[in-house]
Image 1 (cartoon, helix red, strand yellow):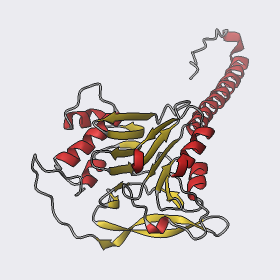
Image 2 (cartoon, rainbow, N blue to C red):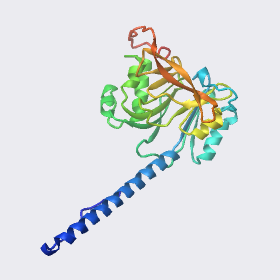
Image 3 (cartoon, rainbow, N blue to C red):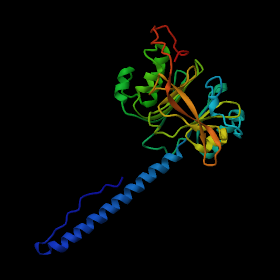
Image 4 (cartoon, rainbow, N blue to C red):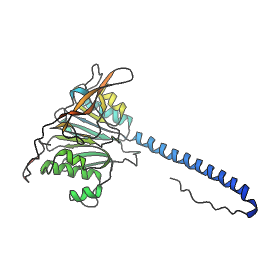
Length: 303
């Protein structure tokens, strides 16, 4: 942002009245100019944030789409067939990176004009692919918690949190996500166990949608037009404060003991467009207690 300095004005004793009016006028003009500049900067940030986009498509074996997302007469496509949705994404956002996950699906993201307030990070560690957008506020705490060095960034923290959950399972998955404080969305795929794991922060600060294509494959993106291309009307905003895993499906980490119920999402024309998932305050899950921890245990099928 532009640096606004301090202006000093010499005032003679004989011109205090006119000088006072002049100073008030000067302050008004300065404040007006500052407001316009601030609006311009934030408008620029908003514009830049709409340029950055990401996409994930998962096969049904990796992420089963909830039935409630499927809308009648959806007019969706087979997103993974011949890379149709990936080609569409890269044509709209030239220079995009497409990560082929084989039969499991794909990840894609644009690399230019990112939102500086919600940056995108991508990493691959030991066959774990992770796409992260946003900002974690308690980075230092999580680095210490997972034994990471100072150079570790947000996406590495998410990968290590997942690996700890998968291999040692110290506490439930909802606690792992709840420990992450900030504005974020992440999508993770583990090729060694063929599992997916994705989540959004409690306020839904990062735009994020999910839906289903014509074959029931799960599609995720922050780009509404890409969602329409792949899912037709069968998509909705990803529920804030929630996470999804291959084995457990959609769950709330804010209210882990409550069920989630789908509420049909209706657009301005009265058409059903997927469903919004809400916490059902009256329906509670049965708690199975905390699993026993063992160094040789693999909790990938239990989280």
